Amino acid sequence: MKNIIFLFLTFLSIHVYAQRSCGTDEYMKQKLQDPEFKAKYEARQALFKQEFKKNAHSANSKKVTIKIPVAIHFPNGNPSDRTCLEALSRRQMDVLNADFRSTNTDISKWSAARTHYPGINAGSMDIQFELATSNHPPGMGLTDGNPSVTVGYNFGNGSDTDANWAGYVNIVVKDIDGLGVAPLGGSPANGDATEIDHKAFGTDSGCGAIAPQAPYHLGRTVTHEIGHFLNLFHTWGDAGSCTEDDNVNDTPNIDNPTYGCATPGSVVMCNNKSLTMNYMDYPDDTCAYMFTAGQAARSLAYLNTIISEFKSGVLSNNHFESENSFAILSNPVENELRLRTANNILAKDATLQIFDLRGASVLKTALDGNLYEQNINVSTLHGGLYIIRVTSGSHKLHRKIIIR
Ligand SMILES: [Zn+2]
Image (cartoon, rainbow, N blue to C red; front, side, top):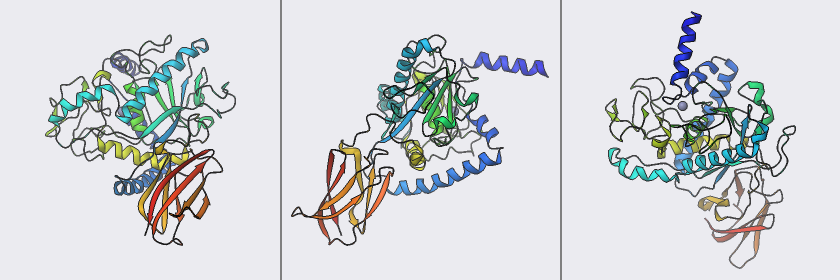
């Protein structure tokens, strides 16, 4: 038996870099056998379902950029490679942001490919992954201004969570079986790890043993695994049958992954053309270039579910100044003004003030900087046009609102 297992492992390791592989399905199968994990997972999924329904209603309302603090860990990295590993991490972050925002240069391939997939649109999310730069957990040797990159720190003592790093999206880069593994619907509060193989992280030249290798040298393994973290299933729905769905309404129903670099429209399963260039399939990095609009909506709803779990005050460029720092949901306003701010962006003394058209202040209230969305009662105001001012630190932003 031992020999058979050994042969099987050898077979696996030979194939690890020949074709994409992801450990998430197996990982979740095992974790869900733990009743405590299962209960937490199901509670989060229930919250997600509520949020997803809500989100569908406000799909066209102006959104604000969601900022996601990220920490990257190289438990086996050589401290003398720190500068190189930080640069490698930054290149990976650039890929992650471009892919989720659909600003990756190779999205241009979609305009030709989409003729095979009527009704499917590429998805983009107004989100930004950022390495944290301040208020690092103590004992990591990181000071304010350093990026949240640990080198030689044994994340979670080798386990899949680390309470020291609760509040971040943690990416742990090490030698693993397969290319990556992530919790499906991960928890920042839990300090969950998304693990990436040391040969599938970042782009361009690496740092010693930590070096991206073709065909997984463009950082798309991280895009795929963070997709899982944000509650996306594989496009084939994991069960290998045409009846099992990925719970995304615009991805064609298929029953198996496609590896390598398929010609768009050439792979047919369950009577559908497989979306082989999707990040949640198994393409090589050079042939992976899109999420669908349905996947984007699903991940965004999941992000809304976990947004309060992100640690505040850790991102350096979180200034309340750009036009998309806040949004008024549902304008005209009836009784309650719903204000959405980019997460963790408001100063402690932030206020909201409402002026009538003569410039007289008619309402002033403190805002809670920890909230992503808050409701302000305006039922005492007469119907009409008003100007609202949100002040945070030295920054002031204005919007017109109509009160009914
Ligand atoms: Zn996967």
